[in-house]
Image 1 (cartoon, one colour):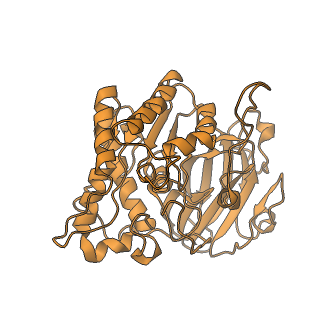
Image 2: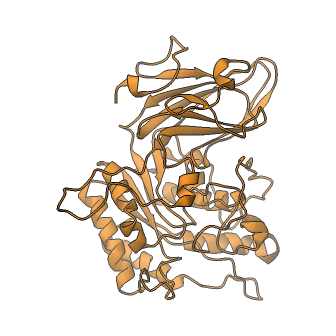
Image 3: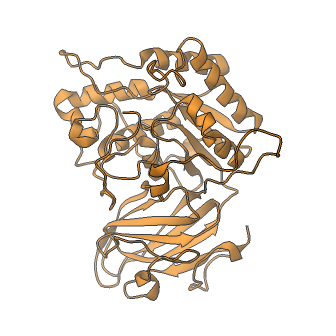
Length: 403
């Protein structure tokens, strides 16, 4: 991708070849101008206490370098990308200090390569009204700076050669676009280094079948290259017999569809990984978690062994986490003040993402070097205060689809 495709201001003569930099220091013109299509600027609702900044970019993977700090005050900066993907958490800077951090971001649009005139298919992912409200399916990179943000500059450069970790799944995986809901997939980037991109294609309400018919899997496969990774987690919605068009049985059609996903990844030289679905938060009187997706988790474990595919047993880890928190505290990890027993808030999503990162470290040697998270023990989860994440600017009282 030519550097001329990057819409940004060249303000740093020391920037690497192909990279361009935007000055976001207080008082700079770039810090105050509103975003206009094809350019760069602030999104609505932004203030010095928290702001969204967009840069028009073509679809691709990008390395973002941020210079954090302020000459006149201390700062504590959290950075999220697109639909609240956590990139940097609580980066503290002293007055006058400058700190550099890097991360990789996936930017995509709904466009697909059109099929031949006589072939079935489509030229766009079938996004819905919720998708259209997000910052995930557009022709720009959007960064959110939160906490007590102290930002000097943003530098963006193409990074299409870096390996990509694709996520295919449902509402417990996706990038939830609005507070207070959150899922583990949008927390994972903050637990990995800047040598791998997380491309979260998961969608609330999705099943193995609908992910195909909505052309989301086509979009994912179209960006996949040899050496990439595909994490697959479905089950919560696939088990619903009241959804007859998408129901799959745990002993037959469920593993059959998973095998197709595995085969498509392998055909492209990518590495499939199976993830068991996290459990719902229903406790027996004696404090143990009720099994609601066990047949599907068991099917995933068996298939992983049969197909020699790495397994992330998030079902087992989620049960351990909830039982360690107990019936009184576990609701604090869930959406809608704990009234939602399926979907998580920032705290719960952070716990599950750390469980995923630990499983990567323990079981996938080729990916383990990318894990930067400290060791995580599901039976001893950190408190909500220890795992605090600054909330985003966008809020909604709508529960995720598939609830």
